[in-house]
Image (tube, rainbow, N blue to C red; front, side):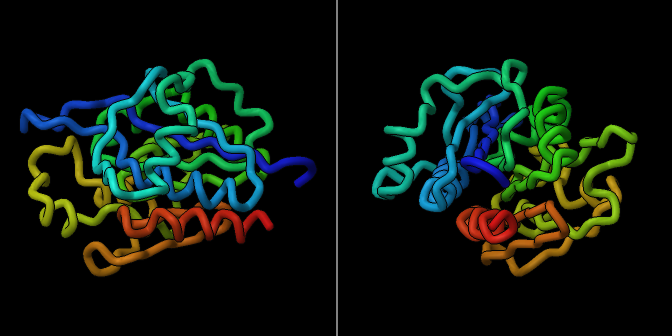
Amino acid sequence: MEGMTRALIALTSHSELGRTGRSTGYYVGEAAEPWEVFRAAGYDVDLVSVAGGEPPVDGRDENDSTQNDFLATAGVTDTPKAADVDPAGYDVILFAGGHGTMWDFPDDPDLARIARSVYERGGVVAAVCHGPSALVNLTLTDGSRLVAGKRVAGFTNSEEAAVGLTDEVPFLLADKLTEAGAQHVPAPDFTEHVVVDERLVTGQNPQSARAVADAVVKLIA
């Protein structure tokens, strides 16, 4: 691809974890690690969130230097909202996870518009952990689902049970991906696992975030 490769990392704006009374948001490492990998590869990296502004965080590790760099310098306090983003020029969109995505990613028309445009122009769509929730309803211009007939990874039913949230999330991600026509390919709980199918790159859990970004870089090289 000519010129600087441009990547967009999408973050949830949803902060309430079902009926638990707990907060959620985007899982910081799942945005920070790809951000670091992409920048190391020379990419121009931007952020976007569903509602704009400063999205809610989850899974923050205050001793993690990558997360600290990301939160300090990536522009997380003032993200543009998806509705205001022009997808032209982006070679990659990566949907970071965090449980919040399960509520606002699946039906956001502007995230879908951006991902559709990137993919149909020959770019890469990537997602990690719960980030593939953005893909469950995503259709291409011809009406087909992007994930139909493709192998994908994503947070598994077993992992959802392990964190005790099976009854709190609006749906089980693996089941919904399967319903959309994808072949969900699971690995053991909380192990690094990435699936690449053509220009779709998906990772299973937080442990897979860096490897998802590495796979994207390899695909575009």
